[in-house]
Length: 102
Image (cartoon, rainbow, N blue to C red; front, side):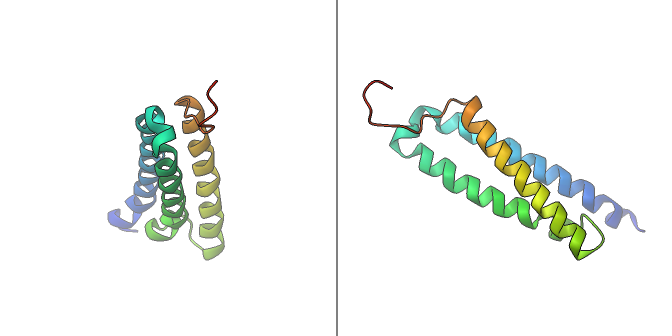
């Protein structure tokens, strides 16, 4: 196995971590403007991040067989959803707007 092939799965993990970190950082950026379009931006970015996480195992060759790559893909998507929701909670993003008492 050459060095370039051996580093591909590690780069896939690093790319997945970068996508998750960017998603949490975006949650903190849009939290103050959640009721004026920030929540929609965060939702669209979350969906794009989930799509990116779903294709990472296929692009970076994580897992040797197609079945394992599909399993890794599902695992990355589950972790992406958890990161997405954790970003909402940690940044205290408001998603109920227009009810004067919140």
